[in-house]
Image 1 (tube, rainbow, N blue to C red):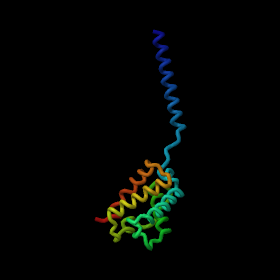
Image 2 (cartoon, rainbow, N blue to C red; image 1 turned 60 degrees about the vertical axis):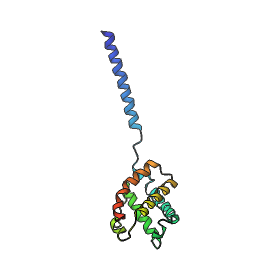
Image 3 (cartoon, one colour; image 1 turned 180 degrees about the vertical axis):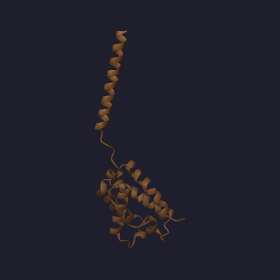
Image 4 (cartoon, one colour; image 1 turned 30 degrees about the horizontal axis):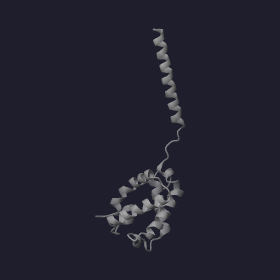
Length: 149
């Protein structure tokens, strides 16, 4: 009987030690970064948008749409929008997506081309695919405000 009692205590001590080690490991593990942080904060987002502008300039499917556009204003607005959307401290102060895109008659093909271009820009900036997907998931609802059918 005493032997069984000591085995239970020993087992409980081992379980307690494992639980303590697991708890300590969890405490020392770095907290998961926000999407804003994973995109490189504002500087990283701004670099992605800058890269996007270069990619769009080479994309014959959509580059005619950007002739005469104030690219500094576009870059600032999109960077602020993504910063805000990704949980950063930015306040997006431009008009909403529906107003900005009203009357332009963007097509599904053009929308998809811009998504392709954004993915390419993120790849060129070394953004991991999982992070890209998290951003794209946040941007996807804007489709209804950009493409009117």
